[in-house]
Length: 307
Image (cartoon, rainbow, N blue to C red; front, top):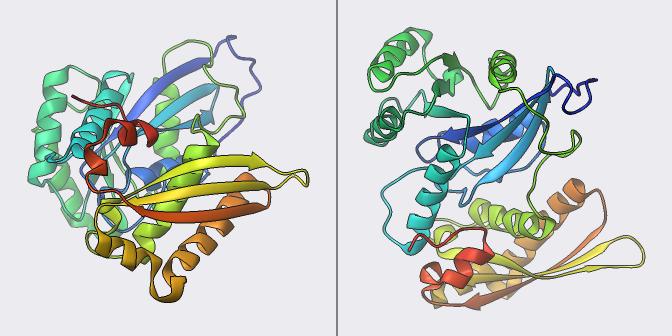
């Protein structure tokens, strides 16, 4: 749904950063993917799927809109949690505009109220975006908007469904008009700044979220160990899944290796479509207690250590 401008970069162009903030499972990654028309951020029904900032480039009406999908904001416990929340607020501080994305079905939860209060005190220009409106009776939307508008000075309000696309054209048009004058910061044909090695690790992690349950996805991380181009144009990717407990390793591998084979097969198919080439994916599972408190592991998955 993006439009490629005819105007060369720097000649009457606009460009700016837009941070997408919200509580876990508000639909931030789905919104980013739908607006850009590409699978840039992994998605699962489980909360706290996104762990670091993901940038998506949307070209519309002469504007380059740099959308930043941030981790859901929640009360942190581990070093990993603190790094995720720091990444979210860091995305807001660097942005020209912040979108508070709210799950309309969940409403004004304590988490949403806390984020709105932080935005109100930041002085940052922010808009309210109610998501998942297809799951809520229309009569409830205006009262919810009124309640949320008392929490922060939102300059505009939009009602959308990232899943169906309803309301997204109006939001994209408004974002294009709101961007400041300036040259493009990325080539117009770019979709993201996410390195392919990190994308591969994220696609594997997405399948871990989709195919395992309870605490296993949150206790696992994936690192691309090697990326080798092959003469036939395909790529060989070797990735390691680190887990915190022996039981998690057994669950991920599955009986006779069935689970890890399924995770690898589906991730391989997804990556082949995203990279538009044949992919040879090899996964290894290792137990590493306390990986979520290791600075090196956080850097490997694209997070800064918050200290």
